[in-house]
Length: 402
Image 1 (cartoon, rainbow, N blue to C red):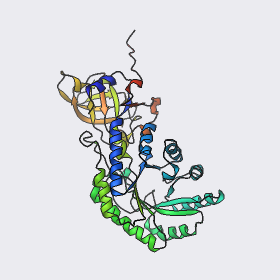
Image 2 (cartoon, rainbow, N blue to C red):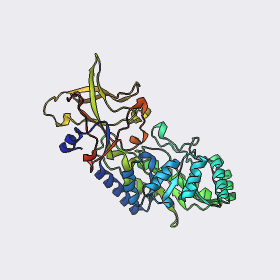
Image 3 (spheres, rainbow, N blue to C red):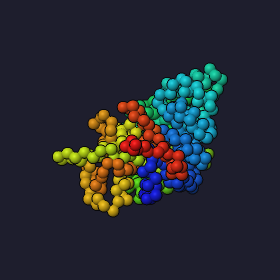
Image 4 (spheres, rainbow, N blue to C red):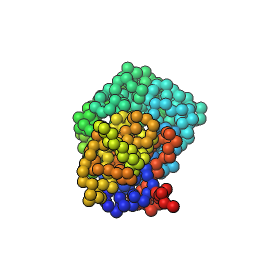
């Protein structure tokens, strides 16, 4: 929860902006590192969740690897301190240019998602006299019990390779002279809250698949279980740091591994979601016959999750929390300025009586927030403001002042 001094400083900063609580980020990353060491599991941070340089530099400094899904993410991760031999590159549509640049960089592995991709990487490595480390992403056919847009491990999916192709896959890997097969990669979905049930099932299915590949002559040195650990969007203060211990313990208790096998995970959201808050200001209060609207200066161009997924984010009136008057609460539809009907932060949200100029906080926006922003309607991109560097934030301009 933000203290009164921080809120007073916010009042001097031009909105909207993303506020990063760097102390919370450090505590979260440090706790994850502690649990990973306790259970003997390697972490690759899923870069797509947030690409802010200051966050990546801290995460890479803890010895984590990077999970990337584009060529530019690979280059950015490397530039932010992740060693090349700790960078893995997933994604269903790697271009020839992206593959070539990753080969030159000397990354830890390509996580391949189709048979044709393996052909292409093998041929390019051959042409350039290189050998490419490859893991293969497998669909374990598990329902992650999450939103359909972030469920990725079902039998037929654009991601990964399914069971009906296993024999052909094994044959290709054995015949590809410029491919070094190092392991199997899995990812069943995101924002998973039924942690013990879902990840225990994933591990059991992974055990069967790993055994099948090894029976057929391919040694699996790395087992990558992907990410997916959910965060608490309803009560971000009560559960600011996700339950990494339950996640890692569940994996450790259910995965079958030899002493020479490494187990990897790829958290993204769980490391960064709670450390950021989108700060916006009420532009207008609009009263209708059946609804009241708060029109804010932040819109779906700044955070698209509510419009894209119907995602819930807790919304707080920071200004009202500091007032001793206006105690009345009222239901509001909280909307943005973008010319789209889907630009809605929340409908019927009960908030203290709110007025023009109030500062509003949209919580848990560190993951898939700023990184998915756009300049739709030619809006400016909301800047980053860091808790340990508030003085450098852009100042608000009073256009009514002569």
